[in-house]
Image (cartoon, rainbow, N blue to C red; front, side):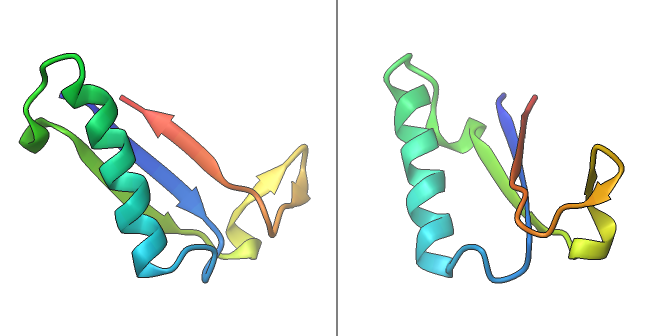
Length: 67
C-alpha cells in the first residue's frame, strides 16, 4: 500500500491542488491494478524554521517521501 508524504511550507498548496495531486497519484497506481483505497497521500505543513537544507533554513523546500 503506497503512502506518500508531502512536506511543504504553509500555503504552498490549495485544497484543490492537494486533491488534484492525490488523484493523479491514485490514477498512476490504478493503472497497475491497485485499488484506489490502497493509495494514501498526506500533506504536512512545515514552518520555515523547521526545515533546513545544508544547515540553512529552507523556506520554499518541498519534500516527497514515498513508502
